[in-house]
Length: 230
Ligand code: 9WO
Image 1 (tube, rainbow, N blue to C red):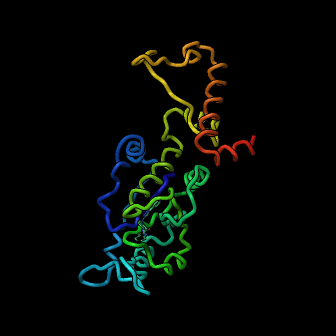
Image 2: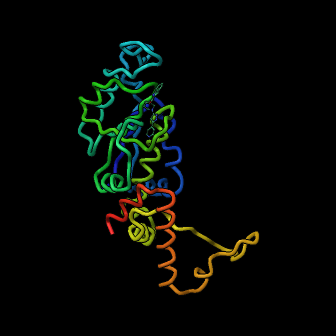
Image 3: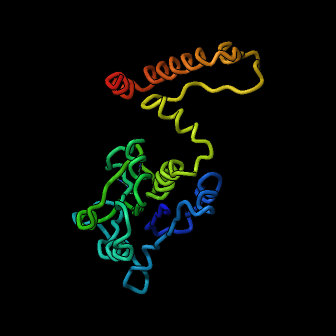
């Protein structure tokens, strides 16, 4: 069973982009997931393939037309999984949501441009609005690539060693501990002795402490949630 993504965009050339390389690219070649782009412009009724119009009420910029976006969404009707619209207005994405999406059959990702999509088409299609953070891009496409990447790496068979995912659940809700590789001394900076000791229990404890320290210092919001869970 394959995990299938549809991406609705006026820039289909942006895909697969980074998703054609590395882990995700190999997983697609192995048939573990698939990506189909739908060019929203193909659904514009007029000769000039207009997808946007000026906002009612005035103001700057342009809005994606509901009829055109609706026709593009209708072309993938019945496909499994939610329709996700990537926007700074959306619910902040977290790893739990990513896990839920990866466990499902796939998703449809709607990429907006300009000032966004006419609100009525989002309502009519039960679109789920998702944000990757408090910043504004020029369009949803780079966010779509990030979201798909986060899901694909969790699909069964994608990460060769399941160890990495086990480690991830051990660290659940915490930020990464510091990593080191050879040489043991680089530009006068030593790797923490415990990591050279071969004492696996101490190493595990040290990494846990470090993950907790980094989380406490940098993300008090995550730390409060982690403490509540312990
Ligand atoms: C554009 C704009 C221009 C003037 C005043 C306000 C404005 N808001 C926007 C805007 O939010 N445009 C979005 C561009 C419309 C939806 C697609 N775009 C987008 C998605 N930008 N940033 C994202 C995004 C998606 C997920 N996580 C973070 C950012």
